[in-house]
Image (cartoon, rainbow, N blue to C red; front, top):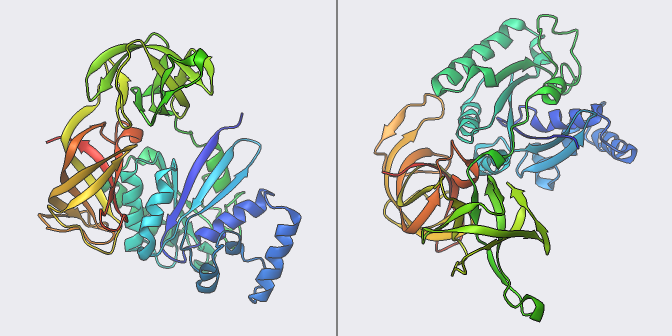
Length: 419
């Protein structure tokens, strides 16, 4: 089975994200003939002599009319080496929340920069968010090189500015790649271009085919939130009691010692089954039903974990928030916090700092978080959470904040530690 690489394209408005994805689809022969014909006809209607590849992913009518991406479009293609899932995320500041959503399930970020304009505020914001989300690699595509005459000096200016930013951010240079390209002309997209003889690296497609795919979460501590208690009314299964859910991280085997949270009762796994079929072990991302030796009273949201690898259990949380709503954060107001399947009442006690996305300066005791702000906060919850710092375990270290009155998602958060 081929590996799957999840990619998020990010960057400022009109930096060429949709065009680049369309070019990749076209040059990897991932489009059926009728789709290519439709593309050519649609491009001609818009007055283009060559295909407008952005039309392949800008599916909303408003996107095509305005020439921008609004929603997140997911695109699937493959080569002989691996499969790809690409999230084409919007560049406009107004839709940063959609960028966060698209990048949150990705492993690699493609940050596009218009060679004419260089790095803009949204470029730095997307880089910062990619860093916060712990994406394994950032590939900076300095696009539209054809519009600056394939000038190496201009390319190096952009490289220097973002290399300096990455260094201040603490992003490892080993996980940062730069390449010059032209999505509209195809330079360095699927093959190296003669127009950039000074560039000695790989084409974008070769990078994507050879970059290391992050491993699954089965090497992390076992984390399993109970979603449903399964009981059977059939006579032959009158004693059946299973705890169903999705393994967030780690792996489990029959006979393993586990601890139940919040009760802290320790017991042994007596069985694991999937759709009625008994199995000996299971790992991250699998939906299973777990059976325990002790007949315990568990509820939705309780967590089963390794006996020797407990998460943090606390009502106080230090976290970094990306605020996603027009209504600013209200300190000491009540919200809902969704962590896995567990939804609890929560209060933002303090906003310790708000981080400027370009200078990275932290404004201390800002008092509020506005739309697209990124800040460090202290939160108190109504009941205990069972979590890991996001840097150690993404699957058990992220959450969302919900406005209790409107049910709007107002922020996404990343656990750091308790007080």
